Length: 332
Image 1 (cartoon, one colour):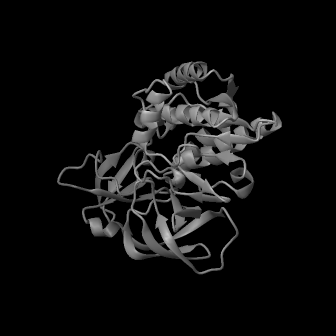
Image 2: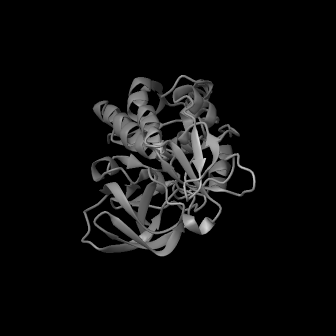
Image 3: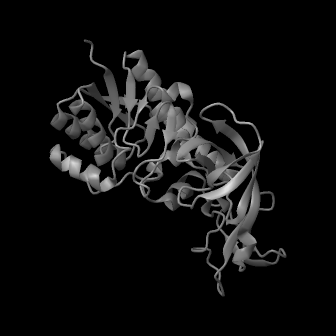
């Protein structure tokens, strides 16, 4: 009987290493693929670790160079969104276009049946579900994928907690590297430095709600809605309330209640399964670290049961029902 071929995206971290080990143990024909996405020390070290992991697991190892595509699709998008005054989420787009898009296309052409990653998420009968580990769940970052992609994906560690994954790594004699995956891998832990290099400085005024000038900023892209730290104003705390792109003004407030919103508008809405009939009620997350909140979606308008703090244009709102990811959209 022909063995099922699975390509595993090995990042150099413990999660994808254990994913590959589990699949090999289950009898799949496993091969490892490292995605070279950016010229940096982080990616050079990750590639070295990924190769080491493949050697320990005795599986074939390949490097796929997608730096050009990553710059065009992800980095350029990220910078363009920041210029518009928004706070984008590059990981969501990267999963759709690069990791579970381009890579999936390439390995399918090579005759692989599935692509597996180290994401903390679960799949069941064509549905995308939250991971077992609530603290590590990454289903939020996968709302843009479609059914065509979903049927060729595997998330082997979704049924394990992070602690269990580390224990499995020891059992498989895999190294446990202290470095966790970075949220914005191309910024190399210093987003401020990355923005100064790529978007430069564009000084403007910090104003209060009445439009009174109370300070100066070095560029609107250095701030996000709801931010409290590093605004540089005396007599605070101040919160970033909004950005006026045309006037290059950063609008701040001392009143946290000003940041509360009852509703928002979404664009680029995607439903992983079939499109529901509106209005539809479900739980949503308006950013990765936020709590679930009940809301009703009617076409592109989302109304919360309870007001939400710091609704941020450019961020993803993800829809959940009974632990299943139905889809999501980008905050306008």
